[in-house]
Length: 189
Image (tube, rainbow, N blue to C red; front, side, top):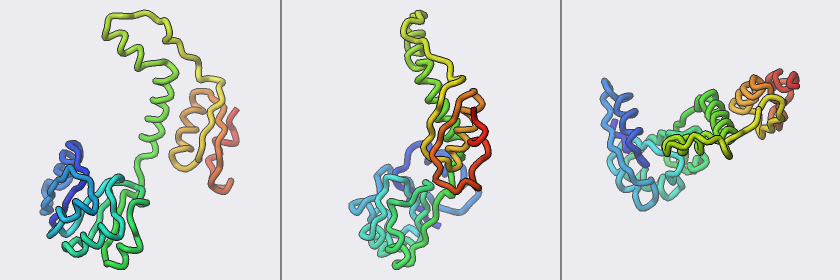
């Protein structure tokens, strides 16, 4: 299968090429974003691989279809940038990433909280300059603080669990029925 990869970054090239080793797919990487102006780059490709900033509206899908594309593979969980009705009308199959690792996303969010609280970014730069002064670098204990979380989906629940482990009181919005919620939220201090 010939696949045109749009919005390709060096890491996309590395990982997709590695994933394709031993396969018979021919990958062509384009740094350009997929738009109405760049859709003709996919002429003759069976599939395109798109990212979140690529445009997959009806006009682009029409061009892809006219160029022979029958599969759109998204490198994202979200698909709000795809006109699904147009894809269905044109007979183009759209597939996506079912989910990202909710643990990785929640842990990264915690890393950002800690970096802001302990001013790690500022400390790092100071140390590089040979400045080991603590002035302006003191954070505060997270233990005993209240953490507000908007959304208790997979990521939100894991983030709540981690913050609970820090000894935080967790307050969260609840987009799901109570029976689906992790019991963690009802046992927080």
